[in-house]
Length: 184
Image (cartoon, rainbow, N blue to C red; front, side):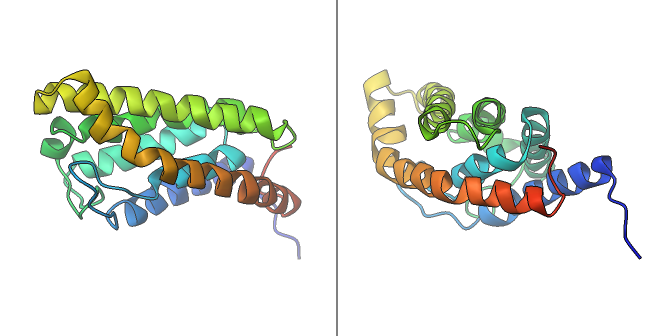
């Protein structure tokens, strides 16, 4: 007996699984000054290989709404609107455009790796911009102080995450497509 897969059910399940994965990974962050390090950006890079931009955006939106509702899914097992309004809120909200932009440029694993990397770099740049501006406004520091705290310490780690996604992402896309879980 063969089970018929519904594209809508499969997409909904993947969206829910991605939101849940963010909710599980983000709390296990490493305090690194006022802005913690988490694996959320790596997950967003990988989501770009298996989801369209609307699906990736929706997964991140569900994650943000879970945290806004008070579930402890943000870094350090925190949640609530206070976290979103605080100094790191711009980064959490910045995951939304990051996920859409990344998925728009990375989705097709057959694109040259340079295009995929460029998409990740651009999307991460938007995340840094939103998060840093938000942090500067909340912490009342200047632009260069914000860059020193919100960008420079994270460049090496995000570079490693991008390289990992460039290696794992196409293989993940290929395996999921062969399993009939993705549209090609």
